[in-house]
Length: 139
Image (cartoon, rainbow, N blue to C red; front, side, top):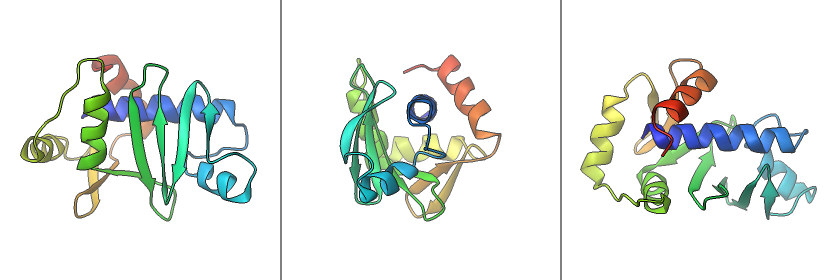
């Protein structure tokens, strides 16, 4: 779980640094809808594909990070997206739904369930938390 949080933070940072007009990752949607950027492309070493109300990113190693965006731009994800991430790792993992639920519950205060089955990073300042997640669990 922390691996996903760390990968999301790394993707956000890399993409924001390469696209100066991006204040949050959700701005990719507006830029794609306005035609300022393609719906598919590369930014900060990540490939991206804007879809519906979200975006699928892949790092240079092919690890998938897929999120939707809440109306305020918050990145949200569900168990399907967490499993997609796990299956794309160099040593794939495919946890059962009950294992994912237990992992989410163990991170109370780190993740918030924003609607049934959908989560966002919360609690400690997000960038500090994601930096810790990358250091502690880079996968």
